[in-house]
Amino acid sequence: MSGKRVLALYAAVLLGFAVVLCRLYFLAENHTYAARAEAQSTVRLSLPARRGSFYDHSGLLLTGLETRYLALCFPGENNYTRLYAFTDSAGQALLYRNRNRSAPFLLEVDRDLSGRGIRCFATARRCAEVPLCQHLIGYLDAEGRGIAGLEKALDSQLAGTKEHDTLVCAVTAQGRLRAGETPQLTRQDSSAVGVQLTISRPVQRAAEAVAADTMTSGCILVLDTATAAVRASVSVPGYDSDDLAASLDAPDGPFLNRALESYAVGSVFKPVLAAAALEQGILPECECTGAVVVDGQIFRCAGGVPHGTVDMTAALEKSCNGYFIRLGQQLGAETLLQMSRQLGFGQEVPVAGALYADAGKLPSAGELAQSGQLANFSFGQGGLLASPVQIAAMMNTIASGGVYRTPFFVCGSVDETDGTPLETLAHPQSRRVMSAENAALLRKMLQQVVEEGTAQDAAWLEEGAGGKTGTAQTGQFTPDGTERKNLWFTGFYPAQQPRYTIVVLQDGQVSTEHSSAAIFARLCAMLDLLA
Image (cartoon, helix red, strand yellow):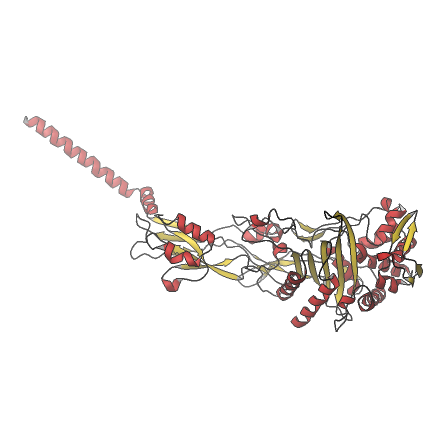
């Protein structure tokens, strides 16, 4: 090889070497490549986004009562064997899928395993094993969005910006934590806020315990008589918060919040006519023969039993349909509709956001121009539909001295760091519907219903109570032809200075083990223990 060729080859090698050096220099100086290289050895894991909690009226938690832990799992740590016993079936399936994974992951476990050398991070379980206020609060989807109840209605306040806390792990190519490194937790401010409800956690627990022991289908509402704040809202049956799909096809409507739906009401509507009559100064007596004929249509009292000569007190006590049919005719449709509207019938009751208690159905004046329709309406049948919230508001008006107050469920949003109120979310209204004297007189009549009448299942309460029973036809039948009925009791307790107004509804029933009045009494006895 000639000298020139050797020199040319040598020059080419030097040039190539210079190009490689320059390229390496530029790569080293390029921060984008450096960031990419760092990312290849860094894993970021997202913890669940912080969501505002629900609180009761005194600041006690209603959600997030139970702590769960997220265990940080790295490859090569024998995770499947170590953690299998500390997680649920979903977690066990995750362990199986990730048994050969070459990257860290998070696993929900039921206890803090830090003492076993496993890094754990505390997180609140949204819904407790025995949930509180399940139907009112609602539930989330797999992405953590509210899709039912107050979770949906107040999702924007509860979720905030939905920012996640992140866990940064410096790992090797095999996904294991690099020697000398520690996972770094970065907190994010999601601006999520808590929501304070009017619910009382002790009262809610008591109502749920009574409902679970006595009812198969229905609801219980408890109002603070002085303010109409809802202290308990229970709907049964419930659903499995951890397996919503299992309840989708259940025939008994477990997702239905019965406290907010509307139903045929029956005789619990009779105090409305009594209130209208007292305000008009009308206190008739009539002779009950067990049935009334209106334009050829026969309306019977329960069992067709004649009550003899009855006044308003006796008519409420015995739940005499004939008396109230005649009273409705005397008062007229317009007077009855006016009192009904004043007591909140035919109107939605706001809960929060787009969530309302159903408006039900109040017949029109045109419908009630038909004598048969007016007769049905006068004892709570026909086209009349109302929600338990509306029935509670009606009875609360009587119990609180004649002032109607809109029942409300939500106080407002709160800063979870210090409990500072942020925004008022409820704006209940009030108006006088009856004079205090007439309300007191009607309360005495309703006490007689408990002491001597159709609600004697509640007569054993030491401090006494007042209220009204109701059995409403539904037009729905079992396969053997038996009609399903709605069984109501609404009342106040104690009798003299009411603290609570309560509604008990057992819907779509053929027969029950406990009357609604008996369920009311059992709950009142438990409330006494909380005082």
